[in-house]
Length: 129
Image 1 (cartoon, rainbow, N blue to C red):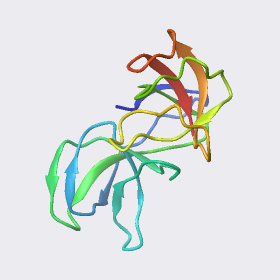
Image 2 (cartoon, helix red, strand yellow):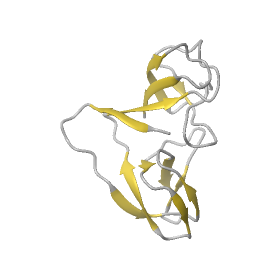
Image 3 (tube, helix red, strand yellow):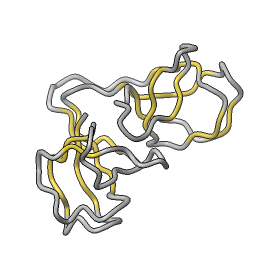
Image 4 (cartoon, rainbow, N blue to C red):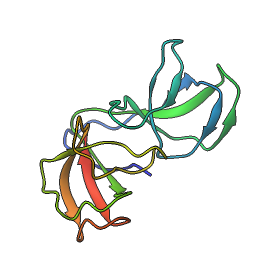
């Protein structure tokens, strides 16, 4: 799960309702607009535009609650693989479960701000996009 950890500007994060692609969503999943204009889960090297604020299964076009991702936001999540050798500033990819980061740095999109522990799989990390 990607949880808002810190927003560096004094503005309040907003919640929007945007039509979604058909699927099952969880709070904290990474999302982006697809070619049809619906939000859908994204992983790997896709930069998220939103973080899901909805849990459930929807048909295509049904609006779900999302939080836009801004450059000044930092998110708390976990490593899905051993990132113990990674340092702050490294950019990693998003896991295929849409709720954590990998230790893969090739074409990474989530910049490590701080590791909260050793970086072993399952430990928490603060990232920004």
